[in-house]
Amino acid sequence: MRSINNAYAGLAGNYLFSEVARRVRVYKENHPEADVISLGIGDVSQPLVPAVIEALHKAVDEMGRAETFRGYGPEQGYAFLRQAILEHDFLARGVSLDADEIFISDGAKSDVGNFQELFGEDAVIALTDPVYPVYEDSNAMAGRAGVHANGRWSRIIYLPCTMENGFRPELPTERPDVVYLCSPNNPTGTVLDRDALTAWVEYARANDTLIMFDAAYEAFIRDDAVPRSIYEIPGADEVAVEFRSLSKTAGFTGLRCGYAVVPKKLKARSSDGKTLLLHDMWLRRQCTKYNGCPYIVQRAAEAAFKEPARTQMRAVLAVYQSNADMMLDACAKLGIQAFGGVHSPYVWLKTPGNMDSWSFFDLLLEKAAVVCTPGVGFGACGEGYARLTAFNTPELTRAALKRLENVLS
Ligand code: MLT
Image (cartoon, rainbow, N blue to C red; front, side):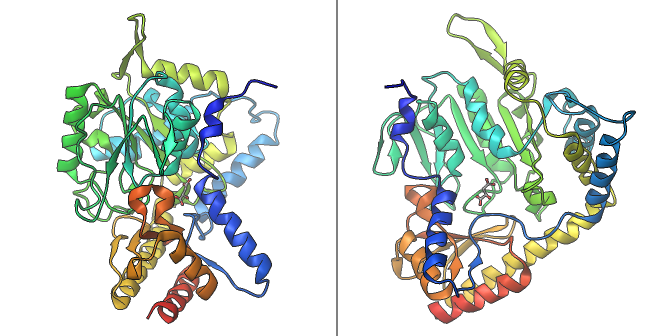
């Protein structure tokens, strides 16, 4: 028999969104007439904005002419895009970084899943519960999560995010090597304000803990006082890696582009005492295993950081924000407790009548042909919750909410 990575044998079931998709497929096979509306996976419904399409066309034409054709690009991403990101996402908000600390990729999911390759086998990982499953699964695949039982891994430190603590993770009592934070949060839709983030940065500095900060949903923040980047907190560039995505902000879920910020101040030590920079390790990893995001996609992404795309994208975000408002209103009308949805495209609701998450999922699918994401799929603390996404069209969101009202009132 071939030798395999045994960690895969210990993985729990399917990847969450594949399992949801499988159940929806089975439902559609049994109900071919059903007109299913998805408020499940966070996939966008609005097309790319005109300025991004224009940049794509232009780049495609360049690829068809010998004098402007491009082959392999720099593994870290083209300088034009790194510079546009630096200016728009950081310098404009008073954060000083070097363009060389920005690594372009095909999306935040790959980066956040791959980055753990840099951690030691015995690194102790802390995760919020509920959590975006990629953080947990990718560490489990690497064999550093221990044994899985009752929805939890034995070597992972879980930081419960519950209604009682306002879905904010408390600082761990046992020191982790790495902690994953996501704000605005997937799945709870809540945010970490400046004080909360400052406490995490101070904790990380005092305990030599690395923060993996997922800011994929920062564009949904409506209040300027809420940090969009962890680097708005002094000292964070010595303890945090940040991940960003164009998927939800610019409609790139199909086109694929994201980036990771790995500051040069982030140090790590090998077991034989050598000091390494995480920046250099990540560069080495990317150069070895990745040939970069396509040129035409990077040109489209560059446009997305500039006018007139910014104005066009704001109008698209407003559509999703108004969907989220509709969802919060509908929950209030039904007497359902709902969280998030203000600085986030996700509404996290408490299932009525203490129904378990999968029963609620089945009820919505069977009786309303509406798909949600069961909260327990994000972790044990998500049991009794469900997540709705605001990324569908306003028409279908309205129709889905009407069906929910009919089933639940
Ligand atoms: C989600 O629904 O949580 C997201 O679409 C997942 C992702 O971005 O990978």
